[in-house]
Length: 78
Image (cartoon, rainbow, N blue to C red; front, top):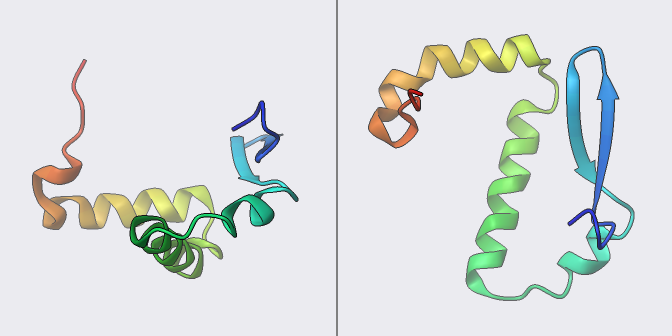
């Protein structure tokens, strides 16, 4: 994704974040499969749900909801 310049990386005091680059929208227009359209729909939902939250708020949301989501999001133990 970086080599094709489809992602932008941003460094801040909160860590590293990633976002779409100006080229991403043009690339995504060419993905027409049902699977790709479903991913786009879920990405839009995620943006609407979490865009106005900071990292701490997202972490709290995850902590509150992880147990109700079941083993699908079980933490990996190293």
